[in-house]
Structure formats: structure tokens, C-alpha cells
Image (cartoon, rainbow, N blue to C red; front, side):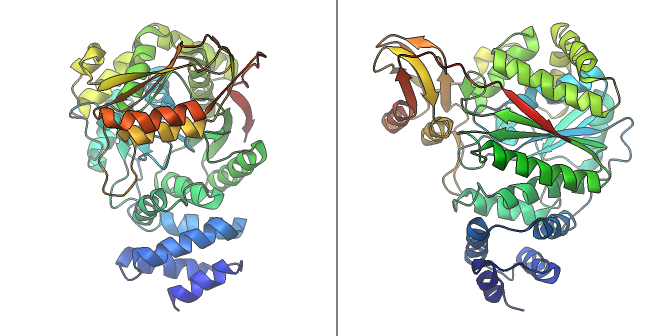
Length: 433
């Protein structure tokens, strides 16, 4: 068997066998297939897609490629939440401690940013000292004691995905439905959670540009999860504007902390946080969606979720003083972006905002790039809001002011201002279970 023949077969649109996927995964992890051939394989998948059977084959092989996280030492119902990626999507930072405050155990393995979308691991690492790599027994101890722990993917957990993830990020093969499904679900199958809530984003800032694509991806992942014996539900969410009012690592952490502290924040962000948390609690058998939402609101207002977040950060050796006083986060130098004319913001190309943040240093262009945690965008005006010419619509942050020009141009290219008020889509579009 040769990798070049498998690449050719997929390039020509043929269905690969279990044995061929086994060869690709096994030989790549051994170092016998170079990155350039894997990049060619991923591009073939990007253009030709994969059948549902191929997705199942690859997901199971990836899940078995490294260590299993059995989580058997964690007491109680264990539920995970995972997003398919978005712009300004800091929900995990709020949802995980909030669900834990409500009584479920959240043992979460998160990823880094991909393409124009941010990653929870990168955001948490913007908190000085926070360790995203921990021994599994330490991870389990934190979940038992605090109720929640968020770590990154270790080299020994789904190592094939870890390597493919990095290649996809820099070869324009991120937004492939089968590659998204296999990446997410392989990590979920490798961990012995009892339930999984999938946040499947849809729209201009997502890898799923249409509702049909998002719903299809959700159905595939939910079926894989349920077939593996895990209670799984997908929440379909709108990503036709940035979620919340910040994009970028430290900026998003600050926004999440303020929401946890006060129970108040951007209305769409808060609505989605409550929807995702309610779904997690409902999977755990704690009641219907409405009663679970009432519990989540209570725990957010009392500050119990904020305390859980502080306790988690402390156990991960993060500097909790930054949570108490968010002004300690360095947010770089700033540049205001001004409205070029008067009218309603009718539309935002959310991917464009994500790229503008990437240009400022908030993400990676190559595998070796280091993230500027201070970089990002404050979204001052969003869809449906009225602006006068010269009003501030966004504020750019970076440690390098030379990056402002390209980012500012991208922001201005990404908004449409018109005379007619256009109401934004609801943030929750539906459920798949």
C-alpha cells in the first residue's frame, strides 16, 4: 500500500476502505508519511469530501490512535461542550464553570484556534500561568474537587488529530465538513464523558456557511456520539455577526470574566450561554430545558459560576488576581475604526472580522507563529445598530501598531451600512438530537 495511491484514489472521488484509512493514520503517526503528502491528502478530502462511512472509519481510527481518557475516577455525570468554531465565541469560558456550579462535572478537552476562528486553549493561556497541559490524574482531581477543568489536547490523546489539526490550520483545509466532524468527534470518543453538547455554528463567521451544511454536520456528529453510547445533542447557532463584543484572546477572557462576575453582558452571548448550559444540565437528567435555564440564571447571578472559574484557574496555576482585576491584562495599543457613512449596520462578514483579528496577531499564519494575546477587536457597533459618519464601529488592539492598516481595511470591507433596519438572526437556530 502506498500513500500516493490513496491520495490519487481520493483525488478521483473514490471511497477509501477501512484498511486504507488505517494505513494513513498509522503510518503518519509513525513519521513514515511526510507532511507534504498529508497536505495533499487533506486537500483531496477538501475537494472530494467523504462518505458517512468514511467519516466513521476515520473518526474511530483517530480516537484509537493514542491514550484513552477513561475518567472513571470522576464522580457524577460528566458532560462536555464543544464548538465547531466561530468569531468571538468565548462561550466555553462561561458555560463550563456555570454548568459545574449547577452540579454537573465538566471534564473538557479543548483545541487551539483554527484559521479565522479562536480556540479556548489559546484564550486560557492568555491568563498568566494557566497550564493547559496536565497529567490525567491531576485533571480528574480538579474535576472532582472543583467540578470543572479545561485542558488542551495532549500529545498522547488522539495524536493523529493533533498533527492533522496543525496542518489543516495552515493549508486552507480547515472548513471541510468531514475533517471538522472527525477532528471533534475523535476527541470526544477518546474521553469517557457521559454526555456531549455540540455548538454547531452557522453563517459567515463559521466553517458552515449555510444552514443545510451546519445541520448536516450536526446530524453526523450526533449520530456518531449516540452510537458510541454518549448522550449527544447539537445546538445550531448563528454566526452571521461576531458573538459578544470582543474578538481575540485576552479581550474575550475579559468579556467572559465580566459576564461571570455580574451575570450581565451582550444579550446574544448571554442567551447562547444559557441555551448551551441548559442543554448540558438537561442531558444530565436535571430537568427540562426551562427549569435548567432557571437554575443556570440563578447560579450566574449569585456569583457561584465566577467562583468555580476562579477555583479552576487557581488549580491550573493561573494568576487569579487577573480575574479579580481585569485591568491587569495587557491589551496592547489601540486604533479606532470609524464609520465611513451614516446608516444601519445591515450586514457583517464575520469571517472578515476574524481575519482582521488574525492580521493583528491574534492567530497563526504558520505552525511556528506565536500568538499576541493582546491582539484583537472590540466590536463597538454590530448588526441592526445605527451609526453616524465618524462614529467608532470597532477598536483594534495589538502590540504592533504597524499591523493596524491592513486590519482596519479588512474591517471596513466586512461591513455593509444601509438605510433600512435589518434585524439580526436569532442566536439559537435549532437543535439536533
